[in-house]
Length: 272
Image 1: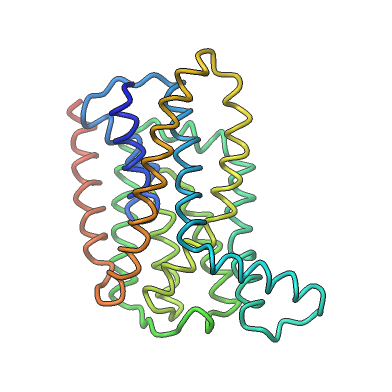
Image 2 (image 1 turned 30 degrees about the vertical axis):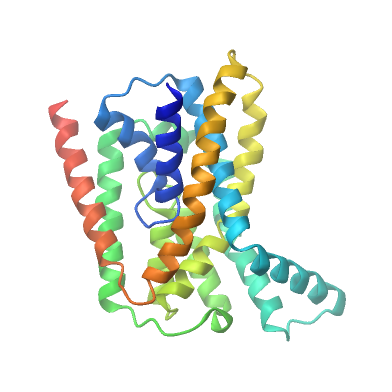
């Protein structure tokens, strides 16, 4: 892997991690479609540091929101009260993050091994596209972030756990689920990204423990660092663009994209 390839894949992660098009699928399919021969160890370092870069993008963009939610959550424990809407939102985000965090810990190795099949990724991309289209077709999005309820948190939390499947867009299924429960599209996107913070943090911590075992650590870290910077910078701007886009547009363009890419991937998997 070259530094340029690492930066391209880091940028891809920064884009696909937050758009409803599946980051896990793109990190496998982009090298596969372009014919890049990437060794497992540099790829592991890039994936780990790329996720850390995505986490930095979220924290940087939502710094004020996250600081307010943490403060409100702590005060709610001290006061033993959830009357503050910010405190309720903080605990709803925590509740929504719980299923995927637990599922990731239990199924981490199985999920990693299943990412090797482009045909599987293509099939799940098709399923993601279909779900996005269905949610956009029948959803009635209208409620704001502070109007989110415990039911929204539970449904979106289960959806995020399902989003760990290879080729399923975590952001896509959570955003679509949020619109189905009545949240506005920008609200569903904001909630979806906020509830990803714990799982991105967990992935970074768990992954960092495996970095030390890489035989060519210095070289792999250099490539991973290039991906980290690209994912953080690109991800920051993609988050802002997505929230603006969804104020006036639907999810259908992402549904179409997933459908087209999934179809191409499945067809090519039979040819190659």
